[in-house]
Amino acid sequence: MKNSASGELRGLIGRSDPVDVEALAIEVTSTGLGAELRGRSASLTESPRCDAISLGAPRRASRIATVFAVATISAVAAVAALRLQTEVDPAQPAYAAEAIEVAMANPRLYVSAPGWRVTGVDQFDVDGGEIYLSDGTYDLQITWYPARYYDTYYDDRTSVGPYPTTATVLGQELRTVRYDEAADTDFATILPARGAVFVEIRGDLGSLAYYREVLASVEVVDIDTWLGALPDDVVFQDERSDLIDQMLEGVPLPAGFDDAALREDHGLGSTRALQAQVVTTVGCGWYHQLESARQTGNEPARREASAALAGSSQWPVVADADPDGFPYLLKVYVRSELNDGPYNFSDLCKELAAEGPG
Image (cartoon, rainbow, N blue to C red; front, side, top):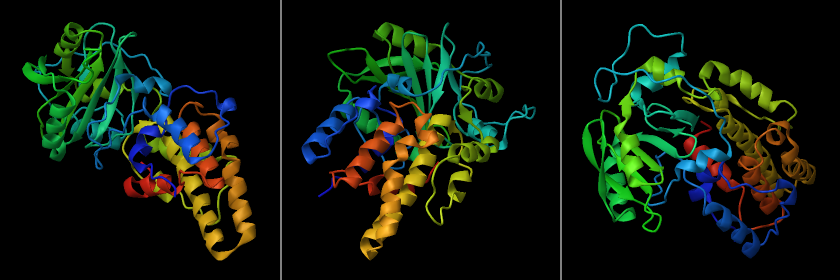
């Protein structure tokens, strides 16, 4: 029987340790593939999209280093009050409407300590998302979640980090937990819920003292500053359709393939995340044809779908992507599916259907 991996799916997409793709001769057996994946997933993290909460799993601030592009930004503007803002600035620049909507809805926190800049984002919208910052040595992640999950996350961090201390953020002295007693430097701090969201800040900054220093420098910035700080690879809605067209070039599509859901407004996200969504959507189309052909005995359709999936590593959008990200996951699932391995491609498709391609 094939194992369900939907619980770690979102963490695996685009997030795996470096691996030599040419050497990925994975033995697709329950023991072999399972061991390979367990070894990889130990260093992966779940997605900040929290409609389906996976509690207690540490989320490393350095996870973005595997696939996200780095962009240089200017110094952050000071703000009049250190508080979470949601009001609208009537004089906004020419940002897309959905970008302004996301910026208005989330706390727009930024580290003002010298040397810190945004290095990446994950897929996010008005009630959930994550940005990654770095000073060149250490990494920090700022995640916002729907406010309805605040109590659940707060209680969970009590058990995950049983060695509490405090850190000051926006003038508030807040409980801070330590994830790794041995390392003693991986800390997380949850801010009280404000409006529709709450924020968690997490980072391994080498010492508690530096962690506190950096968090004390966190400020609320205005919409212009926050949007201007986002990396160059962020995809805005007015760019999404054209990028999807480019990503689909040279990719074989199953009969009746419908990409309408891909082109809908899904907030903001990185180019890497959109690549993974496009590939997963196409792959699931071929998987559905494969399953239908198996059930009906349609041998030509089965061979066509099998060939398409087997050649997916050569699709331009996959070949052009970082091989240590979602191409690794795709290859693992394709090999397993076509060789009766322990991981079912339907796990990818179920997760896509549950949360949508955005």
